[in-house]
Length: 126
Image (cartoon, rainbow, N blue to C red; front, side, top):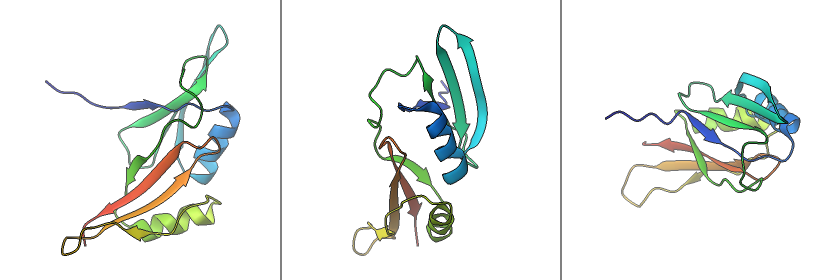
């Protein structure tokens, strides 16, 4: 059996504002923005280098905006990504080492979209 996670629905209150945040600030690519009718709008965006996308829009994500917490974006160089996101205007936490004593470091930094859906940058090792 093979299972591939390829899309995570993200509840947002303003689709255009979410597109602007994820494209201009977070650097995601806009894959699709379609209106199939009936008041529905489906947007799909993908983080650079990811096989999994996020989806949001109007009329199909039923959870409250801001209710998705701690989605992990795994990076090779958290300092470089942190600097890039900060430069783009993302309010992001300081980088923290959350590794256990005597174990390899595990670095995290946190940010949220305009609705409060939260993200964690994670770098494993060294």
